[in-house]
Structure formats: structure tokens, C-alpha cells
Image (cartoon, rainbow, N blue to C red; front, side, top):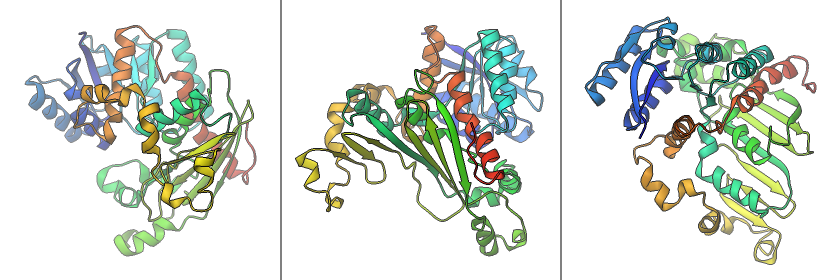
Length: 386
């Protein structure tokens, strides 16, 4: 077993949970450097490593180049905020070291092109850590699509529907980037959780591609109403981000995709994953499959008793990553129902075996570009954007 010596840059909420819950539980990972612009976060990360391994990593504040250029660091994982993770990943590739980068939208197409051009020029491995591509439902539905169960896929839906009002409201206290994002931008700011699995099953960048999109944003009142009650001292804060952003994407092969951002209104968590084909459909909201045959169509007008029928099909379509043998290989303490473990394992496996990255730089650029393009579409009155 090869042990990869890793440097971790960005130890905020996401970085610290990934460090403690995933990286420090992997026998094939040794964390040799930690970095955050805030000393207390970097120190907390160092203490986590010491507690888990008995060895103290290099502690770096502010200057990520110290980690990138550290001779002991063999690969870098970037968990920083949206406004700098692409530039850091570019610097890592220029230094000749493999890099895995957390998700988030891009600020411009120039960022996306620079990311791709750097990877092509250096040939250094790059992976986006889009964990939802490894979700149990997403991988099971992918196998259903590949088997032809739904016929020819025509349309897909997804969403990031997650009540983040408390996180946004406490952004200054917790030094979390979303507060400033929601005050100043209006876009589909977090597209990859939903678009990643959809892009894989639609063969985007593998014979198909996204062609254009249209984005529409609702009014912005959710955070204002929330702050009036929860943090009246912030009640006058102005937010530009629409409460609901709906983006429709057209694909080269004729499919359409609709994704929804919904993070500032009271609601339950959902990724709203749905697939519609000529022979049937899958709907995450009811965890159900509907097929064009008598067994299913007799419930056409009384579908609620069929909710959760996906479980009946899992034995035939469950991805090997999620079968019983696979479960034994995944730490039971993994976050996000183990998908964090799976996505990191995929990165490490590709590195160790010199394989193509399963979520590569072209995937990352295509998915992150949605943020910049949606911002343009909304600003210009919900016009189509190539």
C-alpha cells in the first residue's frame, strides 16, 4: 500500500471535517502540512493530526506556497473558499504536484480556461472532489440509465435545496465566505452537487456537452425576514442573491437539464435528483421509479403508495461501491453517508495506479462555469448564454 503525503490548504468548516472525518482515518494518507490564513484554524488542524498520528505537521498561515513547495508534500488537497480555490489549484499544478479541489462555482470563464490550460500544459493530475457523484442513489440511477431501464434520457433535474440561513447570518462571526457572496452576487452559486451526477449520466465531455443556459432569480427576501427575528442587529443588511435561482441547460445531444438553488428559505434538505426517459423515470423526492408497463402504470393516479419503491430495484442495480463488500471497505464514521470517503478514495486510487481522474479538469470547468454564466444571464434579464 502506497502512502501519499498530503498537504491540506483551507481548514474552515469543510476542511476541518474532511481532515478529521476522512483524511486522518485513511491508512494510505499521511498529512504532513496544514494551512489556513487564520492561525487558530491551522493550529486546530495541527492538533487534530497530532492527536490522530502522534506527529506534528508543518503549520502554515496565509502563504499557501509554503505548503505547495514543501519537499515532503506529494499531493495537495484544497478546501478554501470559492474565491481562491481555483488559483491555488493552478499554483499546485504549476509546482508539479497532484491536486484535489473542493467544489464551488467559478467567478469567470477566464478562471475555467486557465484551470484547463494549466492542467494541459503541466500534465499534472487534477480532480474535483464532487462527492455527490458517489451518492448511493446517484450511482444506482447511473447503472439504471446505462442498462437502458429508462430508455433514452430526455431531461434531468437537480437542486441544491438546503436551508443555509443560519450559516449565512453568522458568516462574519464564523469567518464564512457565504455572507459576502449572498450580499454581492446573484447567481447559481453552488451547481456541482446536482450537475455532477447528471453530467456523468448524460455523457457530458464524453460525446455530449452543455451548449447554453438560461437563469432566472426570484426576489431576495428570505434572509431579510430571517434576520428580523434571529439577528435584528443585521436586519438592514441588503442581499443581492435571489432566494430561488432556476437554471435550464440545453445539451448538444438534445437533452435539457433544470437545476435549482434554494438556500435562503425554510425547507428540508434535498438534491431533487430526477431523470426522465422514454421508458420511465426516477424521482429522488419520492425515492421512486416509474416504468412504462402495467405493473407501474396501474398506479398512475395513485402513486403515493409506491413511494420508496426504489429499494425493490436496488438489488439489481446497486453500484459495486455500495454493495455489502463495498460497505465493509468504507469507514462507518464517514460523513455525508460515506461519499466523502469514496471521492477521496477515487483520487488516491487514480494517483496510485496512474489512472485518469474520474472527475477531471474538463468536468470541473464545465460545471463551475455554470455559476459565471448564470450570473451573466440573470444580470441581462434572463437571456440565453452560450
